[in-house]
Image (cartoon, rainbow, N blue to C red; front, side):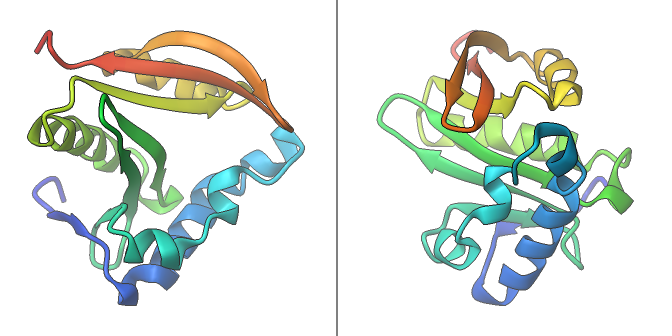
Length: 151
């Protein structure tokens, strides 16, 4: 499984993108008290805009990215629960690093809900540091960044 390609999503992947995103984020609904933002995303628009990259056949994981002038924003990362522990998330995070470098961007930014404490243990292991904690509407978010000019 570790050598599976990560590729840009195409229109035919939209149902899988929605399914994997929903499966990955649904367990958090009760914990945080609101539907996580990735579950409400316009997946078809994100795919059409070239923001979504997927892995697996069928799709087992994905990232949604936005490139800005000074950083790459990791909008969402999702791994289907059945694929957890198989290295999919690790490969996706490495892909995000490579994508930022390929675009000449020095930094990756992301945020996670403060109630998704599992993520707060994972991101520092991959070089992310906490920048701030901020409430955005119904979401209490911990913002992270990873500087790439060190590597």
